[in-house]
Image (cartoon, rainbow, N blue to C red; front, side):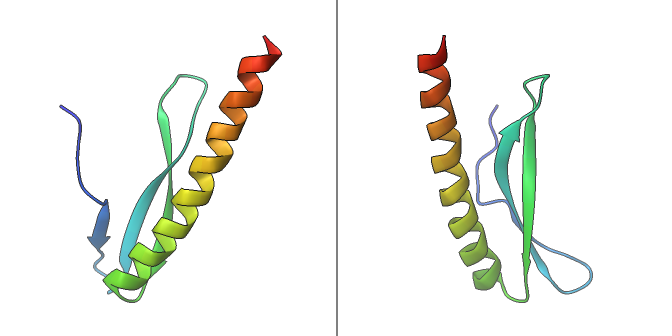
Length: 69
């Protein structure tokens, strides 16, 4: 079953860690990126900015790749 949620966790060192989809490797497994913040909202804000940007880059890459073949 697929996991759901925001992937934001509290760490032992007092920081919040947010995980986002980065890309697929050659074995088609997901590679995640990580951002950190002092507060939950700070980590969430950083994650939403990066994952939104990453999503557009990946969709652009898929569109370009589609026309190459």
